[in-house]
Image (tube, rainbow, N blue to C red; front, side, top):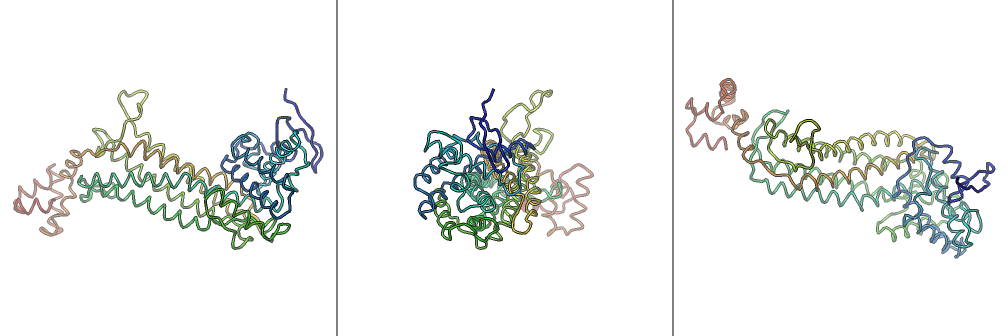
Length: 455
């Protein structure tokens, strides 16, 4: 059986697992919120540890913390950042709306580990106190919004941007490779006028370019951090230089360019930037769904569908039909994108949770926003490496589809007029002949003019 230790908090005695670094407040939160079994992701926890690390160093330099206490907190934060303490963050995503439970989980883990470093015994509140020392100059109300922004921007630069660069390059490469492959265009799922397969892929590449531009614009606001506002945005109980110095330290640690919020009341009362970022991620999800659907339609068949491109075969596609191979990567990406669109709804509702001086749906926003970034990064990577890399053109099928299309008659309008061209299309459809055959059989144009018009 597990061993327990007893700890006191403001509500009395609570039993905490002996192996735990967290304390009474975290234990109460873990017991009170067994709602989903979901936890905030490690990336968020590590960003929170970075903030605490930077705060300890800053408070020591401001002579607000003894150097040995600050050094122990820094070492404890490094243990969290190295992943050694991941199992100590036990609070459910669905908790108090400010994220106070998660903030105190971090404060208790760091103080407990710091006490172990200084005294050889973990736990307790001396010589390092979770509130007085680890949380010095901070409030959950400014730290959790700060952690959301820090984690999101770190993920964008570390994961999503490289994934977008990769898929953009892959699409541009295919656009160039397929530049001479003529095929029939389609509107309303009906035959339209000819184009090239390269044209089609160039459109997908441009969608990714625009996603990257939208992200870059949003990042300007994501770089603003709420840190320094403490309880309501007024900065009560924090040093006037605290936020700027901590943010400088965060910039050194991440290599990014965070800055203090222009208005702390806005930064804590609203989560508009998170909502905005989620909207960009939803836009990317819609773009990936469009591409993935087009890819599986263009590859449909292989004999009774469009069959204009070939997708790489990755796994057997049916438990009953031998030899069937399905477009598994596009289908997986579509499902991931659908999840991001659902997350956007939750984040939008969460953004409405700003009542007076605090948004109280911060954990919900954090969980869904960070999941959306990861899903879009993974979706782009998988679509790039396991699908686009192996796409080839079925040139013969593309050429045959053009020749069979009734939409070719559009090129004859300057020569025959709209009404006569429509009659040609109708006769071709009724007789099962091609446009070329009808025009040639009726002697409406000489061969050279006909070839030029249809080309």
